[in-house]
Amino acid sequence: MTTDSDFSYNYGDRNCCLITSDTIHFNLDYELLSSTSAFWNGLFELPQPSESGSSDDKVIHMQESSTELKPLLLVISNKPIHFANIDQIKAVINLALKYDSDKVLIILRAELLYHALSEPLRAYALAAKMGWEADAIKISTLTLESDIENLSDADADSMPTHYYRRLAKLHQTRQMEARRILISQDLMMSNKHEGDYDRAAHVEWWNSIQQAMLRRLDGSHGSKSFKFPTTMPYLDCVKNKAYVDGDKDVLSFRGLYLIYRTMEIVETAWKDKLPKSI
Image: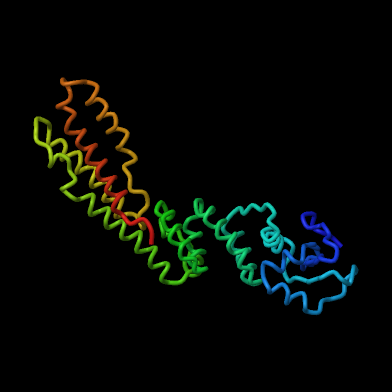
């Protein structure tokens, strides 16, 4: 007999033992186990193959291997556990469903939200599959940096259709609204300022940046991250030079500074006006 080191203690007449398919023994507190689900009580009432040990011990022969069962028992026993990825969480969720352990599912929902930071699309698919609406809404916000085309067929097929449609609509709406904001003439700062600066240069520079961003939007399959990563540092320098050099060069740089302000306003509009969740 091999007993798992994390479950080697004995609770006397309250002891129960789960024996896995690879003959590993897990000794647990029967009351703790049964408190997670009435399903366990029914299992203990079923006839089991005879084992050496006290006749008072409650013994169940499990279908799962020790590798499969141990994570579930760690959660039930409030022992430390580390989930490396969504697949491991999903495996324990499946066992919790099999054994009707709602208390375990509550703990796993918190784990899923944590792992959604690194695997947002997969976490959304799992929350959707489970019908965890509030979690799906929260996680949908985390998918905004992701391309929904990267969602695997297996994960897409696992969730109800309306959850996939809602996620696709979120990304598509953000893309269309971002485009509308980007081409809005009302946001161009040169249209709101008169004075001695090179208006033509402003328009030329802004048109170039605008077209590059439109191509980026049109080429994306999701909302991705709507930013100006290659141009903002340069325009920061333009803004600083316009302030530092004083009156001599302010007019020559004012048009470019207005481009900076236009881009700043566009990014603020994206942040404030684009939908953020399903």
